[in-house]
Length: 117
Image 1 (cartoon, rainbow, N blue to C red):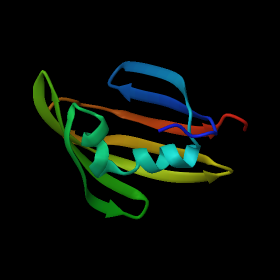
Image 2 (image 1 turned 180 degrees about the horizontal axis):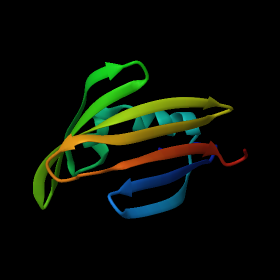
Image 3 (image 1 turned 45 degrees about the vertical axis):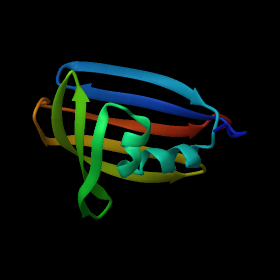
Image 4 (image 1 turned 90 degrees about the horizontal axis):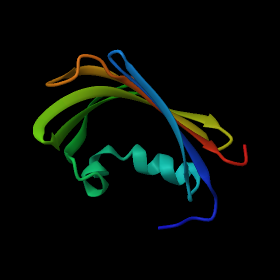
């Protein structure tokens, strides 16, 4: 599905010692993209590696989200997700590792900014 307004997705994550950052341009509004990435239960519909994804607990703006992944091996992990509407069509989704089978540390964020802004 294509939308007329462009959005920029900035990704950054820290998995133990490794760090990475990238920017991508999507043909949709930031609000449309934010609605997709914060609907955790639908992740298996567009990410084939995600077998299930669900919010297990909510504390204020913080959601505990459990992922079941199958990438060569099956594993699961839980991260907290903090969703922030920064105004003017800008959004931020931050995550931090809680527990799991494979990671020891994982922290990062997605920052969505209107390309025009």
